[in-house]
Length: 291
Picture 1 (cartoon, rainbow, N blue to C red):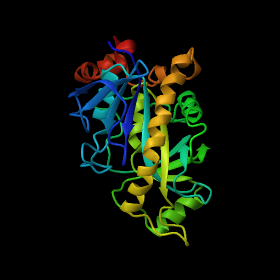
Picture 2: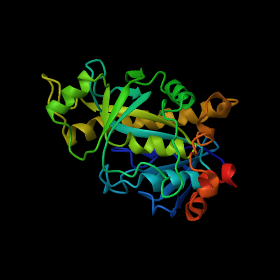
Picture 3: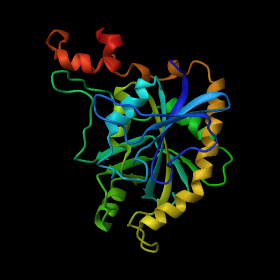
Picture 4: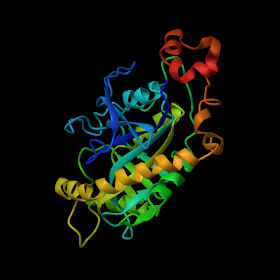
C-alpha cells in the first residue's frame, strides 16, 4: 500500500491543490456510499498526498448533506493516518479577525441531523473525545504556519452548527456568552469519525467574518466568506507543503499521542454478542482488535 504523508479535506474556497506531481484521480466506494468527490492524489517534495473536496466538485453538498462517513472511510481505505481539514469559520472573538488562521483545540457539537458514528446496530463503542484534535499534528500544523503573511492563533473552541443558514444574532451572542471562539458547520462529526478510524486529525480554520454578533461589522454573507478565502488559499497551500517537510523529519510521531489506538478501549459490546454483519462491514477499522 502506498504511504501517504497526509490527506487534505478542503472546505469552502479550497477545491483543489496546486503543485501536485504524478496526479491520479481515484473513484472510490465505501460501505457508506461514495465520498463527496473523487480523491486526487499527487506528490509534493517526493511525498504523496491525497485531496478531497468536502462539498463536492462545484460545491454541491450542504454541510448536512456531506457524506462524512464515506469521506473518512475513503482516506482510511488508502492507508492514510493523518488528515488536515481546511475550513471556513466565523469568529466569536474580537481578537480573532477576518483573515486570521486558527488551529482550534476543542469542539462543541451543536448539530442534530447527521450520522455521527461508524458503529451501532449490534456493535457499540464509546470513543474518547476529550481532546478531539490530535495535539501532535496540530502543533506541527502551527509550526508550518510560522512566518505566513497573516495572524495565526493557537487554540480555541469551535462550535459546529447544523447550517446551511448562518447564525441569528441571538445564537451568535449566546455562543459568545458560552465562551466559544469560532463557529463552523463541518467539524462535527468529521473529527469524531476520524477518531473512530484512528486517524490523526487537525484543522486549519480560516476566519472569514464575525458571524452576526459584531455591532460595527456587517453580518456574514457568502461573498464575504469567498473573498476572504481567496486571499488565504495560497497561504493554506504553502503551509501544507511546509508540513510535508516537517513530517518527513518528525520521528516517533505515533508514539506522542493516542489517536492511532483510539478504539482499543472503546468497545463495550461483548465480542460474542456483536452483530456478525457489522463486524464484517467494519473490519477495516476493527480488524486489528477483533480479528
